[in-house]
Length: 400
Image (cartoon, rainbow, N blue to C red; front, side, top):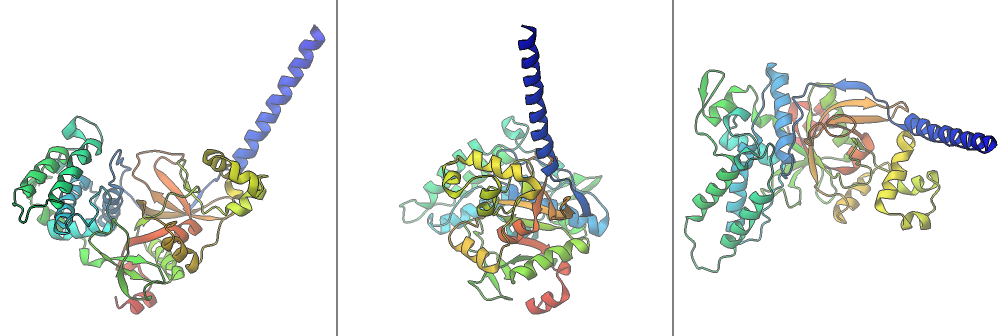
């Protein structure tokens, strides 16, 4: 009996040692980041159950721009932007008789245009997100369940003439869920309108341009990126991929951040806080999986195997052709907006952009994502940046 107990104890110890070895091996492959450049950002926010990443990321970007220019910290109001934007999007949808998508998504250009045309307010000037319906964070489930069929009914009305009453009716729905946009408000003892508050922030909205990189339009010209959430047909400057990346690096080097929009549907964009452009073919052999076995794995199993490679994960080195093919075949999609504010490297020397997300203090890095340069080069749809952050030779080519 004692012998059996001793053998069992030895077996348990061996299993424990093996488990510890596996844990140590996994931990040794987990990225340890060294910050190269980190620019000031405002607090991490949570968009919760709302498709408003475009508003959160772009206002975060402008908060950093204001901080850089004036040294002042502001918390700007995403729901003001959403209120104005959804009404204008509905107006276009009705004009197009429903042949324009009405949805929660948007772009950095929406925020810029709303701020130019309507101004902006601080977060305290409107009800906090979600509070109009008794929630603590934004929740658009019921809101859009009410609003979408309303807009659809007006846009596809068979009448020869529609009345103007649909606009105040829709505005009532928007105000009921998001709060009414104030005509005047008091902030730090002063009374403002949204436009006068915008003027007080110390930045020039004409300084901001959108950048993209595709070959189906000529380089060094402007075009509207053909994605559904770019419903205003806001135009972006088109540059080669290597110059697109130079603009990001030059911006960070000179103290400017970037409002980024791109594809986060890839296996390499993890919910733990990483963005890696996995080369799955090379990864298969590293994980001991040939092509046939790999195809049989469930998505969760594939992600687990890829994640286990950590800093040793092989990456695709994207090219201009890779980007264009991805855009044309729907692999490069317009999923999410975030805020690039820094650069770091892991223990292998691979460089990552530090990116502020709007999912609260989520993931291993409390709301920050680390996306490799390859991931950003391959999966960027477009981004908003201060034109003064663009290298002079590129600015000259663009006529800026």
